[in-house]
Image (cartoon, rainbow, N blue to C red):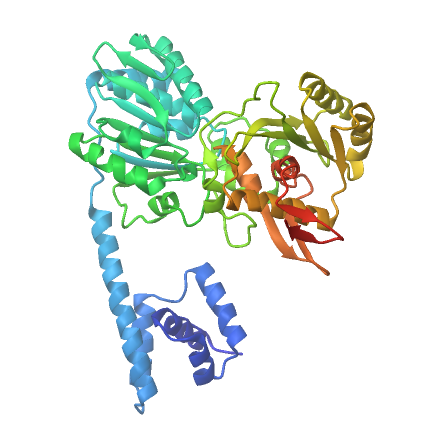
Amino acid sequence: MYSKKTKELILNLLHSGYAASELAKSYGVNAATIARWRKKGAEEGGAMTIQNLKAQIATLSKGKSSDSKAKQIAMLTASLSRLQGAKAKEQKVKNKKKPIALMNGAYESLKEIALKSGELFDYQKDFLNDASQFRIVLKSRQIGFTYVSSLDALLGAVAGRNQLFLSASEEQARILMNYSQMWAKKLGVSFAKDSEYEKSLDNGATIRVMAHNFRTVQGFTGDIWMDEFAWYPNQKRIWHAFVPSIGAVAGRLTILSTPFEENSFFAELFGDELKFYMFSRHRVDIYRAMAGGLKFDLETMRALFDADTWASAYECQFVDDESALLGIELIKSCVSDFTPTLPPKNIPVFSGYDVGRTKDRSVHMGVYDAGEGIKRLCLYDVIAKASFEAQEKLLTDFLRLNLLACLKIDKTGIGMPVAERLKSRFTSRVSGVYFTASVKEALALNLKKHFEDKSISIPNDPLLIADLHAIKRKAGQKSFLYDSDRNEHGHADRFWALALALSYFEKVRERRNKAYII
């Protein structure tokens, strides 16, 4: 109905600052049509090119002049100037050489040994061979970057450079140090000091692992590794803390992470190649990893996740925050670095159990009152492909060993037999919960209120955070519905298990098929 030139002109005028309503009136195009063009143009990169803008300015300059034409030419000329400036800047950046981290002969010789005998995949070798001073990696989970990072850090220490890992969790820190120990043994490197969180070589260089806290990097000089950077609650503060230490000694900076928030500093660092031109970039999703030699049961693993979590964890796609019940910043505000541990047996534990819908996973989560109004996550079990008998035994053992513990279990559908048998054995301590729309609303809003009030503390676990973020508020026929965009295999299990546990501490209550704030 409309020519290609008209579409491109309108798109360019939109980019230049014209309001869609003004363009709809001027060109007689429906506003909804312009909105559709805008969306499609954004997906395809828009119509703005230097050649295109010059052609449109030339066309508008022909014929009879008018105030409207003059305004359009002025707007397009301004856009052309900005685009030419951006292109010139882009070309200038392309011509800049990325700074190189200078190593010694010992580093190079051990690296060659590791490349030949270390059983590394192609993408791990590409990373290890990258001599850039600044490196950033957007990666899938479970593809061995901790393995190769621990090797590269050990080699850096052999070269006499201090190595500092800012770890996403204590568990990840232990894994990394275990890998360092393994590589040292394989390459014949001995440690003068060998503790759980710090190792030092005879040359005086150290390998240290610390929590992702901006205070930990202040005063450190050497190479810095940021592990799972996208999941740090204070990315910019840490960035501003370590940049001076990098510059002072020409230290090396390596940032590695699976993706998370679309509007995060990590996404900016990886995506803005003009501003952060000094970084070499590695993007390795699960499909690239498999092509590079990784053995991975794709079908089985994909079945364990809902679509959104799979896309983030394995396909390197950043998360859209707009429609989520719990925004990313809200979740991060309640994250602390700890490992869930049951309290002494004289302290009650309040747990929730979400029964797996198919043959994949169930989730058991528990909280306790840690004082000062804070409920702390102390139990976090994911049970994959277990029979109902095995699940029932697990819950029975938990209740027998923890005499003050209480349990709420989803008894909708397949969960009913397990819930009823547990109820008959532990009458006063077990409650079955039907997941009606109004009950799920109350559970979801109660959990949200705990996050808003900062009355819940959770560990920095990416899969837990992803499940919490996956739940969306959707309009139903009679009320709002609370659920994740899921495939047939998953439904944000961790969210509902935690919601059941927190329902013992009511801030929102279901009454007469409606949720009320207490």
